[in-house]
Amino acid sequence: MAVLETALHDALLSQDPSLMRSARRWFREGGQNFELVCDLADFDASFVQRKILCLFDQQAVA
Image 1: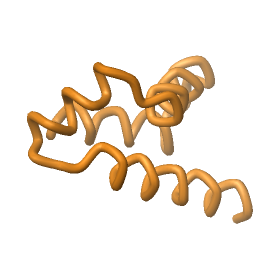
Image 2: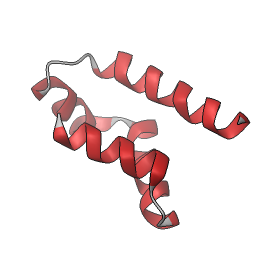
Image 3: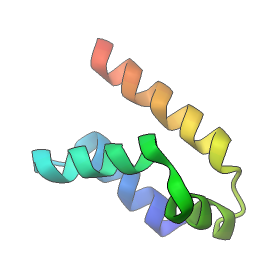
Image 4: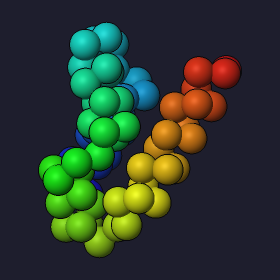
């Protein structure tokens, strides 16, 4: 779960634009690593991805 928390923090609040882009790409693209991290945290990867992408959209509007 700490990996997801760190990635979310980086995607939403990082002061480093490169790190922010990388974290957002990780959530957007999903992939085996993302699915494994979600699985280990006992989360549904598709659900997490949908919710996080909604947060990105909300942040873009604000």
